[in-house]
Length: 194
Image (tube, rainbow, N blue to C red; front, side, top):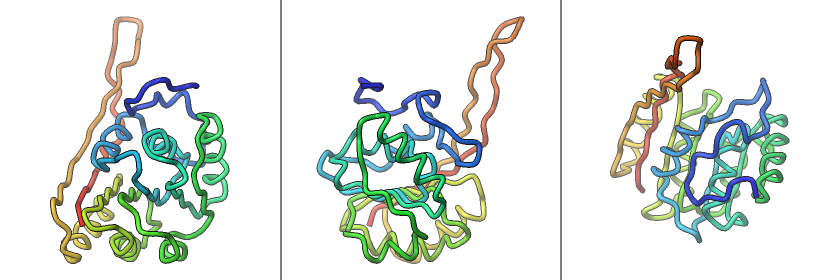
């Protein structure tokens, strides 16, 4: 087993990577997973799974037969499959547009949205409709516009415990004279309960 811990935050370098497929960085994954508030028997949907880093971490925390990972990029689905295999877990991989496949999925206890391809409001509404009572929705984005649309939608849908968090991470990098901090993109994380 590559990751012998129960804590989230698998180091990024342990994942298979691709220049064309985004990865949610380890520090952000840890926060996202804490906002999802997972339990072993939960069913979870990962919308816009990208490299599958969040999908892998979810599968390590819940029964993976109840995990659905969606992406409309075939490269992302293939990379997610590689990472699931690498970590010895499995999930239901769905190569599709989220708005086309979400209506056919079973109700979920938690949903993470990492990509909406410009259809934020529609996808968030569909996700909320798929959440069980007291289910958790988490949206992570680098775009202010996406956060604005997501926040507006969860308020309109009367979600509760709405929280917006901005995360700014800097990682240490060794240089000749010591260690300098290199900043990563700020991330916005929205979490809410149905």
